Structure formats: structure tokens, C-alpha cells
Length: 82
Length: 440
Image 1 (tube, helix red, strand yellow):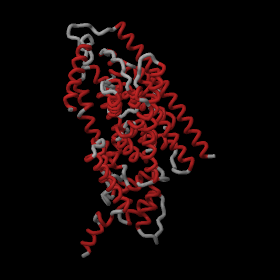
Image 2 (tube, rainbow over the protein chains, first blue to last red):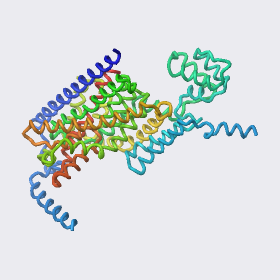
Image 3 (tube, rainbow over the protein chains, first blue to last red):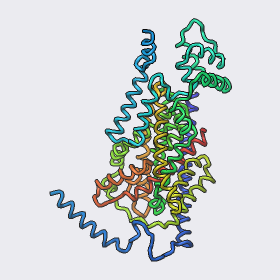
Image 4 (cartoon, one colour):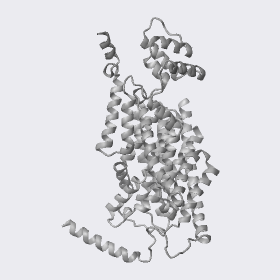
């Protein structure tokens, strides 16, 4: 009987824990999305000339750059396989 | 001649117990894995070395003053200790039997007052706490070292990919299923009579599935300090094995077509969002789960230092110098728990076995969740990034990337996988908070 009780407690902790993790992270998803919207709407980054966008900031030239990089990678791969 | 005998009786060879010999070999094995196989060397080198130190016979580096006195003091001192602890020693038995019975009483059943009195006697006759014991008391028993490491991890974490695609938080949540399934497995094993784990111990074992070293150490120091050595070793060993454990599971659960899915470019995330995010987590924790506040609080603090941009020096210290110092002390303290009496038990094998199951289930749950999300959402989601929901930053994300590249050489999933990866850190800290709330 002792064993059944332990098992039951384990099961309830599993359900409770998993449930709570999901609820908490769902809340976090909602809060994060809201926060991003609010910041995007009311407090946008000042669009000063030196845009401090890191890494992925250069969206407009992305396609060109990607084409160039893909071509280079392709070329490199082909040469190195032979 | 008598002097020579004294030297011989005091030597390591004379006093070495078989258990200690085995543990020294285990320590060497850990060192080998760390040095030759590059298994989490930053932790396994200190842990392995600490394990060897803790098992040096007679040195008692991992023992408290009282334990040391019981272990090596003269019979007269033993009698004093016995009076303090309220034990009657059988005058016919030899000193070894006295030591055994004193040890038994000191470890369970002695009143705090009696223990303190006995400790004072031990200190009075010149015994002190062992070096590793002091490290353990300061670094782990107080909970400080894992928390400082967590702060450093926060300072190293970039939440950008997560903020660009917050839904990946669900993947970090799903992968925590490994923790709870393993907890249930451990409870099941003990109700079948195979092993003997209490619910607290089962919870501490389950947290290995969170694939997060500091969280595992923190939880087991709160819930089951007696298993800490085995749990920490299992957690770090399996984190090193992530590239071997995960890919077969990921390939088993996905079709080639799913693995080839390319994901849309992540949007750029503004600096202000990154600053607000740790504060948002902190508020949620404060409102809903104060028991996760130590872990997530330090994590958010580290991350805020990184993102706010005005305390570069502090952020730099947290992610470099400080985390290195604490890692050394943490590793040695964990090593002090690798003592023969507690480590050489069937339970350790059970922990190692359950730990790997935890990893497997977590990985599978993450991948399945990603498949589900891919099925219901408009934006394509490659199921491979689900496996990164077990924390193990950044190893798990790299594994997702690598398996993705095998299916489609132009598909770079690394940044996409970083989202669930850091979500996994938050998820396992939340899971830890729930367990501590429920059982602590």
C-alpha cells in the first residue's frame, strides 16, 4: 500500500509539474509577445544614422549577400570534393 | 622498529579500503574522460580530482571535524565523544567497533545539541573540517556556487532568437517532460522494489533530464544531498554525450522530408526588448513561482547585466573570471561527494541508467512537440530544433544544426535552435522550482 501511495504521489507531481511548466511558459510567451509589440509600437529604437543592429540587421542586402555566399560555398565544395 | 611500524600504520597503503581504491580509480576514469575524450573537461577535471582527494585514506579531506575524530582519534577521545553523544561503548570491543557505532549515531539519530558538543570536543583535541568539506559547505550546501554559475550562464545567454520567435518556448517546456517522466520512473522502480528511492531522491534524479548542470546540483543539494555526487557526475557526463545520445532519437522520430524543412529568417530584435525580457521573466517568477526565484533571479540578473550595456565590467566578470573561480570550487566540492560509502551503491547505477533515459525522453518530447507545432502553425518549424529544448547550451543547438545539415546542406538551424535551447534553461529552472515547492 505504501508503494501505491509513492506511485500516486509521483504521478501527481508529474502531472502538476508538467502542467505548471507549460502554464508558466505559455504565460511567458504571451508576456513576451505583448512586450515586443508594446516596445515596437511605443518605444521604437531611435533610427539614428549608426544603426546599432547587430548581425542580422542588414536585411535589404540579404538576398544579394546570400546569393554570393551560396555561390562561393558551392564552388568551394565542388573544388574540394574532386 | 616501533617508529617504523607507526609510519607503516599511518601510511596510505596500510589504510586503503577496497572502496577507496575503487573510488580513486573512478576519479581517474573521470580525469581520463575529461582529458583524453574532452567530456565537459571544465567540470570533470575538478570533479575527478576532487574525487581522488576525497578518497585519500587517513587524510579525511571530505570529512567534518567530528567525522575525522571518529575516524582516526585515539580510544580516549572516542570515549569522550561517546559520552557527548550519549552512546555506551562496549568495553570488550576494539576501537574499530567503537568507531562504527559512533559513526552510526553521528549520522542519524543524534540530537543537534549532542552533535554540537561532540564537534566541540573534536575541535578541542585538534581536529578540523577537511578542506573539501569546507568547500562543500560554503559552495554547495549554501546553494551559492550553482547560483553564481547560473548568473554567469545568464550573462552569456543571448535571448535574441527566443524573442524573435517566442513560441519556441513551448519546445523548451515540452523537453522538460524528460524530468518528470524520469521522476515517475524512479518512483516506479522503488515501488517495484528494484531500487529504493524516496520521492525527494526521485525528483533530484529526474532533474538530470533538464541537462543543466547547475540546476541539477542546486536541486539535489536541496532535495537529496546524499545523491549529489552521482547526480552531478551523471548530469555532466551525459551533457558531454549529447552529440551521441540525441541524433539517433531525432532521426527515428522525423522523416527526411521533415528534417529538410527550412525555417524563415528570424526578425531582428531591438535592444530594448532584450533589456525588458529578463525583467519580464523576473516579474512572472515573482508573481507565480517564488521558489524558482533563486535560480531564475540570478539568471535574469546575469542577463540584464549583459544586455543593459552600462555594466560591461560586471557582465565580463560574471561570464569569465567569476564563473571560472566558482567552477573550480564547485567541481572540487562535487568531488568531495564521491566518497566510497555513498557512491559505491546500486543506487548509483540506477541514477546513471535513469539519467540517460531522462535525456532520451526529453529529446523525444521536444521533437514531438515541434512536429505538432509544425502541423498546426502556418510558419514552418523544423522538428529538429525541438531536441534543443533540453538545455545543454549550446551543445544541443549545435546537434540540431548538424543533423539538419546532414539532411539539407544549405539549411542552417543553429540560430533557430538557440531559441528552444535557452527556453530549455528557463523550463528546467521552472521545473526545479515546482519540485522544490512541492517537496522542499
